[in-house]
Image: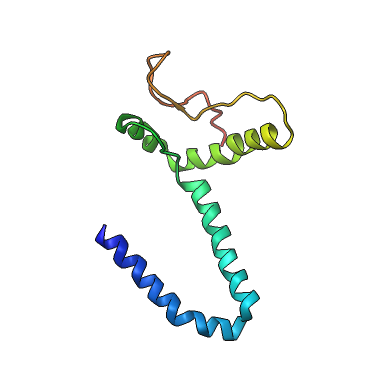
Length: 119
């Protein structure tokens, strides 16, 4: 915890020192555009590389983090994103295909091997 606080304070200090110079060079619109660009890059990186772990047990987290990152990225781009677009933008009735199978009705666990492997 202390490392994260120290890192946060360090970058806040760097921002405090650099911001006036950036404001002089780029102007208010340019600085806000720069930070907006950083936020868009961060959004894409989080979407591709960070799996959802909300309200999962430790055993389920083991299965989630056992999925290779490349597999997770391809699922996000080629399965989840089209599902969300079709479901909420085009209002189509599409079936959701999960990347993970947890212990339950099938008695199996791990990531879904039935996903197409050509990703």
